[in-house]
Image 1 (spheres, rainbow, N blue to C red):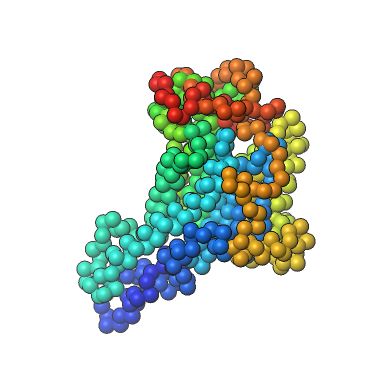
Image 2 (cartoon, one colour):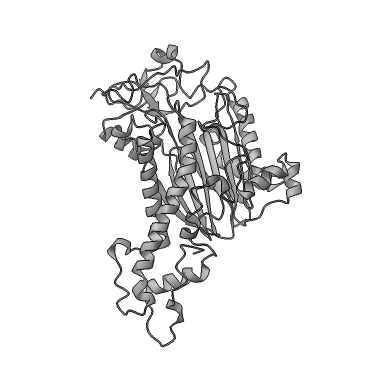
Length: 471
């Protein structure tokens, strides 16, 4: 496996030449010590509190040394998608990528909060795991013959298990922070997340919601193929629906969109969330919606060329194969993400002319670490100043205090139907369990027209501060 958790340079496990048997844990330390980069997790952690000055971290339209990212606002108002690529994340050979698709009245704020905070939590938990490993391997590195007896807290020392634990803990901590946030109401607002860490030849992925990651790879005939890396965690998955129903939530589709299963409260026909896992959405957390991520690990080969992460605004209109074909055929790699978004926009107009286009966000990570020359990049419409500011760690497009970009934007209908439409759309199709009711209105209603698939249908009818009715 490729690069990894760094271990203190004081280790001398590999220096023994007296024939003494070296334990497997020592070999693990030695392997990663020799491949460790110049900086360790803890070395880099001191800069994480100053995100605007962290180098090689981009979150606005642009590119890095091995990736490009692009987002375009839909026809529903403020862009609720957020994205990030963070190269040299914790160590020089680690890259973090993420797409976050917000929904609800404050979905744009939730998505951006998760974008900024989740990577820090992930690095913190990995730094903690590194410290535990250093302690558990101290005996090994000092020649203790009992070094095979490992602290049970960290007895499974594989890199995969460390990342799995870090993803699970960071997602849990992220949702807990959102629940207690004093200035961000996440009662009926939330966000998806598809996050990926590339460490050497390893891909570690954690994800919730319906944002997706795919891999562009060459098959035995040297043709490009699409490999889906994540699963869209929606209520139509049997295991997700079963969990929700066990928790007294309801799963059914509306009559006018029978293909879209949604999550409803047990005592009111709201909110109709179109995903089974999400950050936030605390009105549904007691009824089966969770923020526990699915985790997966893939070892890359020379046939694997790039990874694409995107929000559902892309996947609603483009297939995995179409996206791979677009990325593999672009004139310059720096334009790949934008080309995918522009292709999705055209498909929205063609396939769903009466629907409002959803926000689209795309991250393209090229696995060989190569990008185009700056002159090629300028030809695609991005300025050199933007590239330089992204690489120096400065923010290319500043965000206001409420987390919104200063770039011009349309008004969003916040992915809900107008209140006038509410009574017309609750003829149920599919599985029914009971009835539902919750949260505040705050002048939050849909504008004319709806997207093809709204993440939410209707806000509950009481605020998060009021006592909730019980089924």
